[in-house]
Length: 175
Image (cartoon, rainbow, N blue to C red; front, side, top):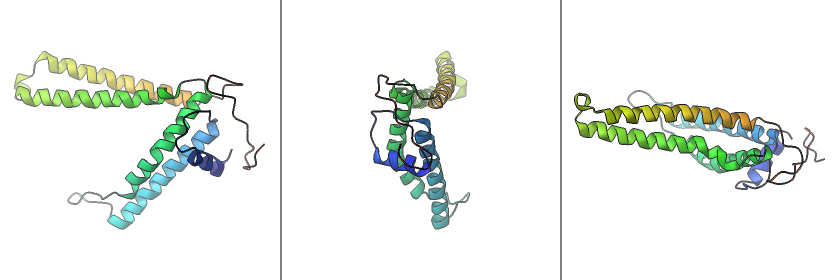
């Protein structure tokens, strides 16, 4: 599967979370999303300027691109995980850990401000920050594990998520 066919396939299956996706389909589409984001950022810079210390950068097209591509990229990753024999929801683990870290940091900041500053910090704040550090390490490990799983070869034959996707020649012609 080539670049254009992968992009076409992933955009056609915009929110399809069932089935399987081979490595080229996912990685070519990821490249498309990254390149599209770079182009959108350049358009933002050309139209609105790149920002200065006094006037922050205005972004319109970059965030719109990211929002539009979030669901199809998640769906392609979900199908890619299925292709390796793993549940697609594993992709959400790093994101859930991020939300937990942000929640705990907000909670810790509120406790810090309510305590009156650094002079009145108690052991609870230190324990909370240690938990944030532990969750951050867990997020890094989970992200690397997900990345490794996304690079694994196709599980041969039928698995719990469907039949093995057909192999397509690089020229875009269907086998």
